[in-house]
Image: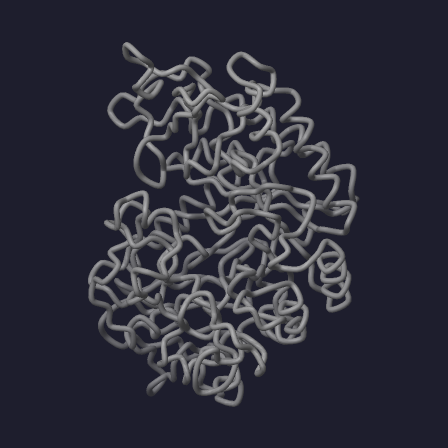
Length: 537
């Protein structure tokens, strides 16, 4: 087994692929695994170390594939299991590792387990795999408790008995099509350990765990009081699950477990990263932080301080398939992010947002630990905020009665080439339009348009990733802050590398004893302009 102090995941640059929107290989308007395979050379040239795939499993797609009907196969819209195996092998040939998404909190309502539970009826062993309960009220007409779905509305849906009468209710912290699994069941626990082995046996290098803190619920299912989520978020028993998963991962050389964990308490967050649990977890405090030097420095310090006692590496991420793209966020008056208010349609200066996004890329890639890149950020894509209502597919849109536009705007299919849609996303002979419409303005944003432009966002990412691989100071390891003016972040990695980020509204002088390696925008008379970052040696 690899020495975990030098394992690949400690400093890897991992590229997230939302399969449906990456590249369409067969012309049906939906991204697929053949489309990814065709672009492995592009990804290798970009300089990433691993690919994280959002769920590619069979699914009714009620929540973009996070409603899984079969954890051991591939959805026909994406290809076949054999295609996935070829993709894993070919990616390894490019030196790229593969991470798959596992969704353990819930499955699809079309999963065989749930279908058998519905058919078996109240009190059956089949229903013990989920959270079925009788309703409250005189006739059971009220939900079992007052829990609310993360997607909006009640977290309970009532079933219909075989004779047509109203039946029990079942819990779903997300959409009704995503019934929560009951992790008190030994069968559930054994099933997911076997799912891990299934994919590790096929050469997968890591597993990203969706909603990792939600699995265990208070069996009494008490009402929420004052908005507290203590009955279903971050319960102590959840750590037993990940200790068991770690033992499974240890059966295979150099495999990683990666948690999606949204927690405000950094000490409790770090518990998931103890030596016998997960290897790494996403750092959402950094993603949500405003473009402000003092706040960003505080988040960096808190992150590193939380990880240090458990010996785990930090991770840094600016965007993903669930959040407003950071080019748009950084162009707003309020540059922070919250799931509770995506502020879709709020004015954004995209020129300013892109300038800040360029600087943020150099900041992120210079910090200690690993980095995640969401597909399209390397070409500077902004959120698509003007999608027609009739094309939106995110269940958040419907569950909130059209008050929250949801996440479709960051999932629009990528532009690869050409001057009009589908911009090379689909083959030339394709007759089906991309599953979400692409803005006409993306003609200047394509990979091909940027590939020959040394000042493009794509060129910046390629240069930064090339340097990151060549500099021993970057990736995992220590850092220390350097003296800096207000509104400026400056830190060193080792003795030979420094990163300076100017978040103020004025140029700042750079040290004369350093040599610039790469800047997010041109320097002016040895000064760093506002909203610009530079790497120095």
